[in-house]
Length: 551
Image 1 (cartoon, rainbow, N blue to C red):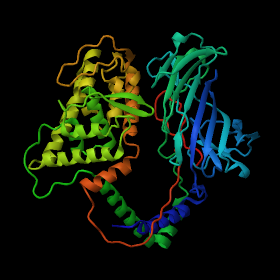
Image 2: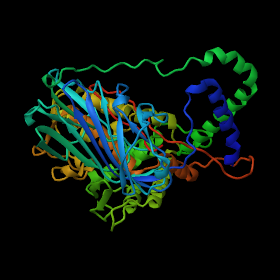
Image 3: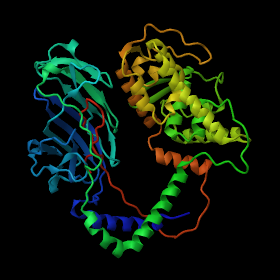
Image 4: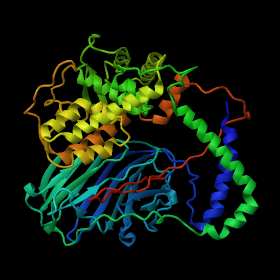
């Protein structure tokens, strides 16, 4: 097996060449070790009459190593760096006014707050920071007379051990005084209130990942409403290296070739580790293997394992075998201990649920996933994988066709209820959901409680062998809200079941599809890493804040 040491020459060469090519405009990889927990993050987006917003953060860190900078992600490139300010408290000392705030060198869109040297090792560090951002209000894509703002609070890199409490508040413009003229997007606020003459929506959550919130209000409340800019494909490319290209090729040509070959080899090997279904051995059989369930077909189509695990538990929820007690943190409850109507692999996934705490046992989950993959491999023997894959891809296409051809809202939501697992396998699932459900008013699907436990009281989850009854008591929501909630909810669910997709997949594929043994250099281990999240907004009517912090 190739040891970590054999990877380092390629990395070193690429780092050296990158620094030569990019010159002074490169980002230096951090040498400081970071480890911290965000005990609370309180974010506020105060929408102004001129279409700008005042963004403020109150962030409490518990520091386990060193924090020399805190990076704050901004919604767009129009933030006013000159307006950015910050004060801090370190182990109870403060307030300390921080100077020297500058554009971040670790994230694409945001600013960095330098922590004075004497406080970089403080156990408790609290930052209060504020900044004005222009061009925050965009046209609402569902109502031409409305404007919208979407805000994604800053989140953190892998060095963050957890985000315990996140409170996000969006404050409407001062002239918006009628609650009936306001709307929310993505997730329903935890509370809505009228305070200090302003309407405020607040969301309470936790978890270190991208949280999406948004509001809409009449356009008349602001003087400036913007349309989303189309990003140029050349915007972030530095062409200075073209001048030096002939010199680089002559001077470092052999090194470049060696580095490229090594990187391609390493990438190919990494891809092999991510392919968990073993290849067919010998001459492939003939004909289609019918009768695979949606999760089994997903294994055949090499769908990411976090989505497959999500599908299995979704199926158990629909059968009334489990209930979702909470999402943050994820807690499940087993409702049925019998085996009626269960596939063999579902029994293993049910066993991964701790009956006392409701948590998922990762080792049992891996074992259940391995058994699912081996079961699919066994079922495919004697059949043509290529023909079988094409057959199940057509099932996915037909599922979308049912949605597309539905003329009535109730038929369209029923098609989503019945075919969700097959639609979820599609690589363009998120785009398709938002496209086909962007208009209309729909009841929420009967299985909505799987994604949002607060809807469990309305959900009528019954065994799939029975016909789902009409559920007129289910809440009604605009199609765009349902689409956005399904996309964000199903992403969150998959990431909760499998928090480290690469590690989980490689540990499973090591059993189901092990790599052939190879020889290589011996030696110790080594590696490097860095953190930071870029701010990228690609939605209509969107102004979002996202980034890494603490570097």
